[in-house]
Length: 140
Image (cartoon, rainbow, N blue to C red; front, side):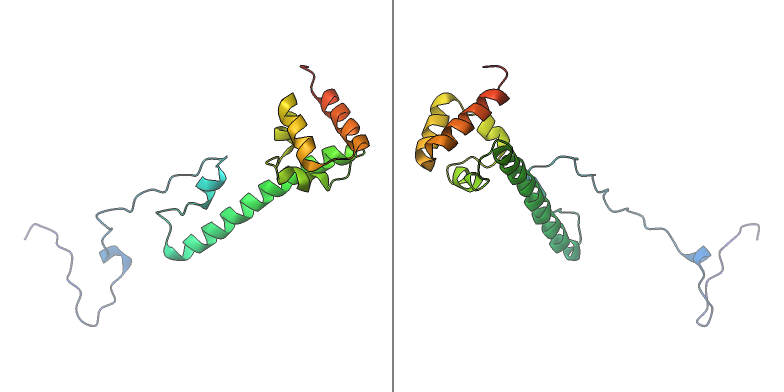
């Protein structure tokens, strides 16, 4: 008599939100992805995402990787063209492992000489490239 009890709903009664119980266990929190991820990390599926989101996440990762690769190509091609060299040399360089501007700029003299021999660059283009690299390396 002195205690309050929630009324049990009958067969025809409307069960409102006041009679619903909250779940006893909450799902795990999803961690925020880091701002800069490697291509391998970006392509790895999120274990907490529902199956429908896995495909979307994979598409987004591939798109991000393509955009990053495209930006690297644009930098290398722009560097070549700014120094009066054909941008097509970027394709020849990529066949020998040079896929972005920083890897070209950081080549040592023996690596650069080997690259120039493998790519079979014209003599005048070789002079222009060596001069451009020399001007972009303040430490040498």
